[in-house]
Image 1 (cartoon, rainbow, N blue to C red):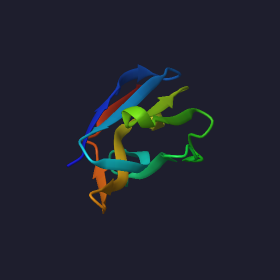
Image 2 (cartoon, one colour; image 1 turned 90 degrees about the vertical axis):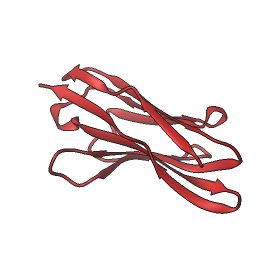
Image 3 (cartoon, rainbow, N blue to C red; image 1 turned 45 degrees about the vertical axis):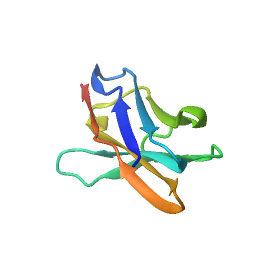
Image 4 (tube, rainbow, N blue to C red; image 1 turned 180 degrees about the vertical axis):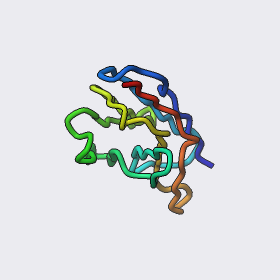
Length: 119
């Protein structure tokens, strides 16, 4: 089984920054895709940013000038650097990974980390 541990959420004033981390652990797996989603109260979960093992990434239009996704393949860790945060960025942020383990595909969600931006 692959376990995900998220960290870095919290409370910040508008204009501030936060960096989220998500580390995957376990044995005998390889991760192809890592991403961040978010879900605000009363809204559907939406993709924020994703990145594949080769480094190609995509970032949602709504945050592309403020958020950056990166990963450390050696550590099986994905990061989301969030700058110039706005109140509308308030949400629970979820890490998502997809890959192979024992020849089988897997997809896992992290437990979620709350990001609250005060205006």
